[in-house]
Amino acid sequence: MRRCGAIFLMSWLMLVRPAAADLTIEITQGVDGALPIAVVPFALSGSTEADTFVTSIINADLARSGRFTPLPGRDLLAQPHRASDVDYRTWRTINVEGLVVGRIRVEAGVYNIQFELFDIVRGVQMKGYTVKAATRDLRQTAHQISDLIYEAYLGEKGAFATHIAYVTEIRGKQGKRYSLQVADADGFNPKTVLDSVQPLMSPAWSPDGKKLAYVSFENQRPNIYIQELATGTRSLVSSFPGLNGAPAWSPDGKRMALVLSQTSGNADIYIMNLETRQLSRLTDNYAIDTEPVWTPDGAAVLFTSDRGGGPQLYRVASSGGTPERLTFDGSYNARAAIAPNGRTVAFVHGEGNVYRIAVLDLETGSVQVLTDSRLDESPSFAPNGSMILYATNDKGRGVMCAVSVDGKVRQRLALQEGDTREPAWSPYKK
Amino acid sequence: MVKQGLKRVTMALLPVLVLAACSSAPKKGDTSGAEQSAPSAAADESTPAQTRALDSAPVAQPKAISETPAAVTKGGDAALPATRVIYFDYDDATIRAEFREVLAAHARYLASHPNVRITVQGHCDERGTREYNMGLGERRANAVKKFLSLQGAGGKQMEAVSFGEERPVDSGHDDAAWAKNRRVEIVYSGR
Image (cartoon, rainbow over all chains, first blue to last red; front, side, top):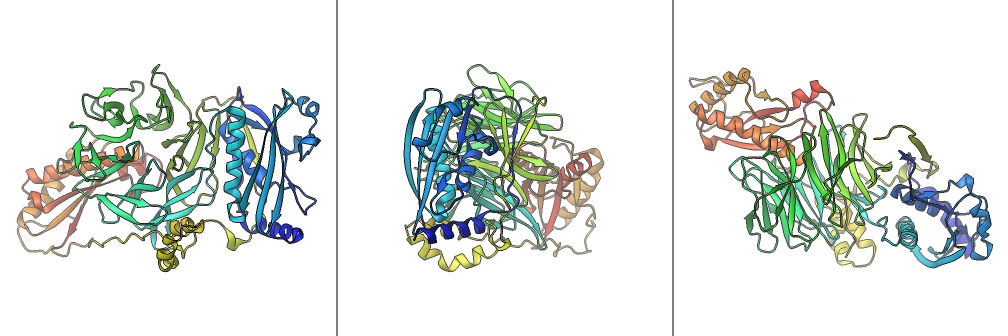
């Protein structure tokens, strides 16, 4: 039985490993405070070789967060698989502070993964876990293990086992095709949730992570739809004359901020009660008011407006009132995303022909530019606030990247076909 | 950003052990195949339901709008101008002086052919954010619509639609491409 399991694992690994999946992590500067950690490849029952599939996913997750510095495999001084084999002194000589060791047992296609976490500095075992996974869920299980490690060492929830939604454009023989995709947070396992020959835009997750709102041009006009991911069922929620765009769910999921121009030809922000479909107008200005996003408490909406001449970020109470300008540096500040703690705002900061992702501290007003490419857009926070996903352009092709909130670690996401754009990080599933 | 000391760590995570047929990219046949299985998949609450249902997304079925001006005839006082595209400055919706005459000709044509309908499509270059550009495309389309209206075209003959930066005519990433993409297209549709 065991032998069969091991053979099955080997063949599965060969089938599922995708091509061209070299993940490049750029560390732009010494990451102060990142925890040096060693994740030893887990022992694999029935095999003389250790598993590197699970641990390589964990290492990539931890590195991408910017909060850990995983020890490269070649620098592992020892390969313990259980607590009794761990010699703290060995790891102290290379200044490793965290250590993860584990074992995988395969039985009837089910993976039993046992692993332990160690505090090398204090010389103690912190926690041990047993996780079970079906073959097809192994990648997601690896992300869940990353989440457990993240939380054990940092005391904050991890966000590796979450999802991202994004839009792709693929040029084929019969013209362009657009699709809305949902993938794992690291870009693997993409699945098509909508396919169209007309452009798709502005995917937005419902707060429970079960639905996506988006803009589709399938009727030759921009209309807003809401689609349930589990069933594929969708409904047309906004198809007024003119613009229907930039859907943003309220934190309680009951209302949606959106942009309409009605017959005025001018973009303004409205709030729709999703149950009654009743609209109330939030902004009324000759300027373009767009890209609304709710604060986590639902009390205010941040948006982009060019009422001051060029696009800048503003904040208005979600009950209405006079908007207050938030950004002052630079000629183009747009497309706000608010961190889950409500204190930081990521946005697109443009100067000349260069557009980058920046963060604004709402308390101090300080702005820090996080990226250094040319056409960066669509920032989206991880549900734990640790990373920002964004789209950029690499040699003429749209790609997605993740940057740690301190800007020190950037990574391009894997497996992207065609032009990829408008990534939206899912909330935690409720 | 700090470029000094930029260090690249390439993690060759996944050795190339792949069979070509097993890429995890979405498969071509997903939607058609899924249509048959969707109802049962949706009802099935066990784990695979979500995946299958995710694959079983509805296919967007756009309604074709005739791009050819079927209703356009050579009769009447005004001829239909050959130029149907005008261009704009960056982040601007002002109609440039050089395009006023061609727009006036469209207005005369529309005024003398009250059954003819047009869509005024506003477009932007890729710079800046997508939804802001939707607003900018809407503003451009409406600037043209307003100009045509002042020149005698009927309000009901025209519909403004913004495509933002979603439908560039030039997929380049330089000034020349951007200049071509900042435009309004007048699309005649017969009725």
